[in-house]
Length: 224
Image 1: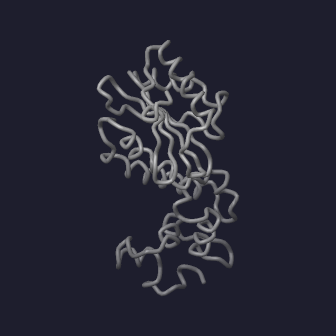
Image 2: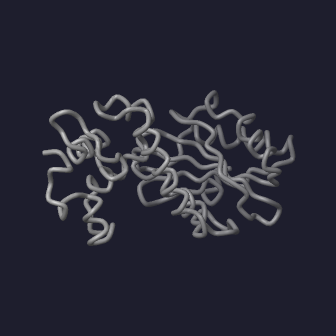
Image 3: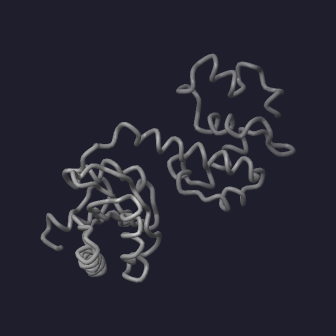
């Protein structure tokens, strides 16, 4: 049944206006984003449900790429771009005004990066850029994939730091396994970055590894 053939009280937009956005299901909210057009023989609610099935659940939408979205029948470039834009806006809204202004501990790093690593199935490496008072200047994703010295190169970390006029950096990455225990490669990459930081005059303060609901600081463990 097409959306326009549903009783008005059952259409996603009308339900939002009558009951509020918090009363709508994930598929109904996604259907509103994708306007009213589905495929022949399938309305936009069915299409939205297929997108969620493809992602795995609504939380994993954050990791879908443009090309992955466009592989879904019924999702063209316009819908894919809109979904990606709304996801990124949602993530920024979560962080804006809530992250600690000053980074004092690994727990502060956890607070600002936890949502970026949630549901992530690949290792992602970030540089947390700080000024002379350890105030947050920005976040920079340095690499995606298995962590090793060839992928995480000092030039990428310090290029971002120099661009933001950072005085120091904390690096962080996730272990999709959930176990934050550092590997030999983790320790080697950290020491390599710290050596490079001493040369360029931008201190690497710590390396924080994210597991499931827990973080490990190499500095606190005496591994830097």
